[in-house]
Image 1 (cartoon, rainbow, N blue to C red):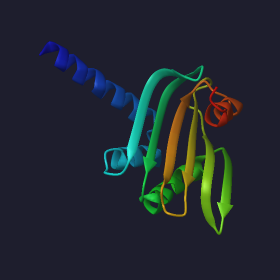
Image 2 (spheres, rainbow, N blue to C red; image 1 turned 90 degrees about the horizontal axis):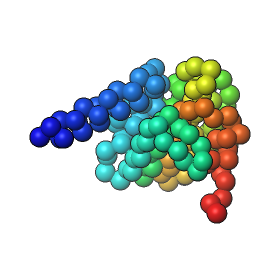
Image 3 (tube, rainbow, N blue to C red; image 1 turned 45 degrees about the horizontal axis):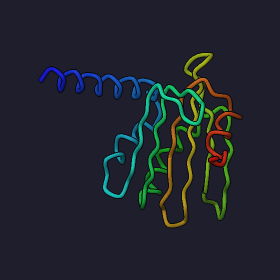
Image 4 (cartoon, helix red, strand yellow; image 1 turned 90 degrees about the vertical axis):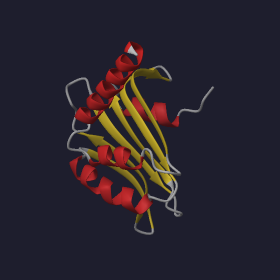
Length: 144
């Protein structure tokens, strides 16, 4: 009984910390709305290491058909970005890389986004002491 209560409190604390970091961002709405939806797959990690990089928060969502709604929600976060890199085809954003204002000097925030013509795709939110080059290495480095 005590173990179950402790686990519940720990889980709620992790969710609260994640939501606080994403406060004011629509990406938080994307994860909360579509994270448990059928056909979607969500991964969430806190205070972890991924391919040698220390991350405060990592959240990813792979979706199958919610592309239009997700693209609309990301428009607000795109406006807040300090740096934007996108691949656009036929007036549609196929992929986006958004650097958001940092939480502190050491805590940077990034949103990565991709969408296929069939409205499937992925959204990734990363927070940590990573440079833009680190993000590119983390996301596009081939596994050994």
